Length: 170
Image (cartoon, rainbow, N blue to C red; front, top):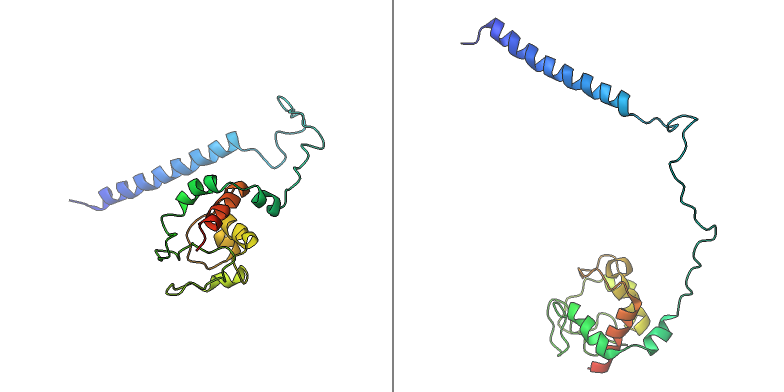
């Protein structure tokens, strides 16, 4: 079935195909390649977008204490909906420890819950400031934590949920 001539033709066809592929790739690079110097000396932009030199002035950052003082526990109850999947407020543990009475409670102090140990990086107690930092970026604040939540990017949401949890007591 396969003699030497047929095998030679097949190998030659495969090599020819690769040769055509490489040559077309080389030709395309030569046609469409932009070197490190751009399009040469005569290159001019089609249009220029003018931007103010100073740009927008950065907003003054409001201290968390002021934001927390104005926090709305009712809005925090809605934000807490993101936490309900893993945390409860009735004194029972779920995937995460219960959060009733968490504000100003010692970190890692819920009996019967197996903490990862990474939370000691946050501080000694769950003060509103420590909760704010942790809720902004849990894995960045306590690297190695088993909490898979990405965090709450808005400081107002964090303040509201902390106010809500604090209003529940424990």
